[in-house]
Amino acid sequence: MEQRQNYSKKREAILKAIRSTTTHPTAEWVYQTLKPQHPDLSLGTVYRNIARFKENGQIISVGVVNGQERFDGNVKPHSHFICSVCGRVFDVGGDYLGREAAERIADRYRFQVNSSEVVFRGICAECLNRQSETPVGENHGRNF
Image (cartoon, rainbow, N blue to C red):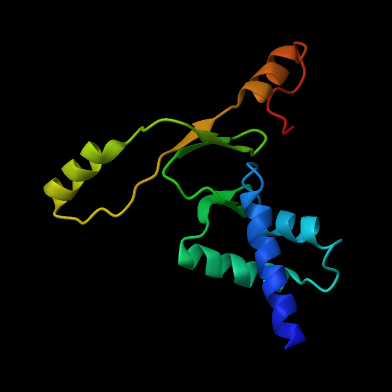
C-alpha cells in the first residue's frame, strides 16, 4: 500500500512540475527538478507518467527542440514560438488559426478537425539583441 501512495505522490509531483513552469520543460528537466525531493525517482518513471499525461490530455507536447521533446501544462488552445538560436519555447497569445480556418479545412477535405496548433519559429528578442551586440568579425552563427 505504501508503494502505491509514493507512486501517486511522484505522479502528482511530475504533473505539478510541468504545470508550474512556462519554460516548456523536457523530461530531463522534470527529473532534475524533482530528484532532490524524490531521491528514488527514476527518469523512466518521469517518461512513463509524461506519456500517461499526454494520453489523458493533461499536458501537450510542443514538439522536439534541439533533440528533446518539450511539454506544456497549459492545454488551452494557444500558439508557440520556438527560438532557433537558444531553443527556448514561448507561449504566444492570440488566435492565429481560428475556428473558421478549421471549418474550411474540414469542409474542403472532408476531415473532422478536433484541434489545431500554430508554431512560429525564428529568433527571440534576447538572441537578436545578443547578435546585434556581437562586434564585427566575430562568429555570428554561434549557439548561445
